Structures are given as structure tokens and as C-alpha cells.
Image (cartoon, rainbow, N blue to C red; front, top):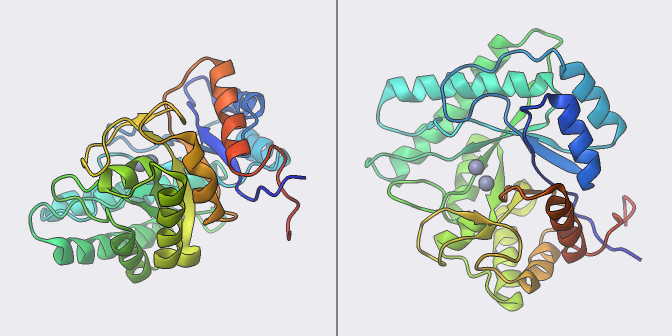
Length: 292
Ligand SMILES: [Zn+2]
Ligand SMILES: [Zn+2]
């Protein structure tokens, strides 16, 4: 009997069209999925997709939830430069609308960097930027359009990056009235010890204590680089610094929170094996029925 409550999926490409993404979701056994709705490395707005309705129908019929979009990496809502902030808020707003159009529920955005003005100034600007993005998105959207929910992601704490600790992520989320996404490779690089079952459970408990129900998503990634080194880098589960034995205790502290891997692609078999492995580490292959 399975007692798994975490839904498991991964980031997938959309370059072959969303119909192909749907086929991959099914082939890998994903229960949730993350995609990009624009080029994450450039400022170009998302372009409307002719296959949006197919994707909405396909994910709904297959019970894929949540559907997640990851916002552009260039977006920084917190820097000193006002033009960069306004451009970032506008870009995030476009992504909230574009994500809504393909039926996505969440848009993950990085917490950004204060650029030397200090944590407090940066956090204030991040909170203002999230407000501004939601206001702009409401203006861009037609009345019938769905607009996705922004969630902020923890950082590795490199340079002047905000929100590398669960407490600061929690504070920003609370002040902005948004929920958060916690990336495990970022948390490890920021100094959270996930190297043993005991320490991983403690980290999960600490996250739960700091954030309660405002953890909307886990980015489940093994870390390429050392704990506390503030350097990002993702590996497949069980292939980096974090032993697979760490994960059951971490999941136990975060019941019901959906999980998306952002690990390097392998062959279809390797990718399906990873989804299966994480389902087992989270408590078993079938999901527990709702309400259990
Ligand atoms: Zn991210
Ligand atoms: Zn991530």
C-alpha cells in the first residue's frame, strides 16, 4: 500500500511542440510538469502557441497537476537599476499571462539580486516587483484569460542574491503575498545539509517550520557542487552530492508538495527510471488516494 502524497514530474522541452511534450509526460510517468513559455536566456516575449488548447486539454485529461512554467533567467525584480526592474516586472507579467494560456498554474521566478544595496532594500524591491508584475499581468490579460500564480525560488546565495535561506524566502513570500518553490540543489549549495537521512529530514522540518503551507513546489535536484559553496549545478538524483537515502525523510517533512526535477536529460529510459526512483523515494509508485 502506497502512502505517497507528493506528485512527481520533471522539466521538459517544448521544442518539438506541446503535443510531443504531452507524449513525453505520459511516457515518463510524470504527474506534474514544468516547461518554459519563452526563451529563458533572452528578453523576447512569449509568442502565442497554436497548440495551447491541445496542451490544456491533454494535461487536464491526464490529470497533470500542477503545470508549471519557469520564468526567464534574466528577470531580476530587485536590482538598483529601475529600468531593469520595470523590464523584469513586464517580462514576468507576460509570462504569467502566457503560462495561463497553456493552462499552467504556477510560474517560478528567481528571487533576484540586490546588486549591492543590501538585503532589506533588495527584498523591498522584490516585493514591489511582484506586485507590479501582477498588476501588469491583470492589464495584459483579457477578462476570460487565466493568469498563472507567481512563486519565488530560493537561491544558492552567490554574490548579492536574495532568499538563500528558508527564513528569508519565507519573509519575501509573506510580504509579497506569494508562495515559494524550494530547489534542493540551491538549498544544499546555500548550506543546508542533505547528506544524511537525519540531516535531510531536519532540513525538511526546518523548511516546513519556516514556510508552512506556502511551499508550492519542490525543485528536486541533486547537487553537483559542495555544500555551502554557493555554486549552482544540478545532477540526476543519486548522481551528485546527495545520497538517495536522504530523500525519504525530506519528503516526509513535506507531505503533498508537488515535485519537479530539473536534472540533466538522459535517454528516455534513464529519464523514466529517474521518475520511478523519485516516486519510490517519496513513498511508493502509486499515489495515495486524496484525503488519506
Ligand atoms: Zn530556477
Ligand atoms: Zn530550480
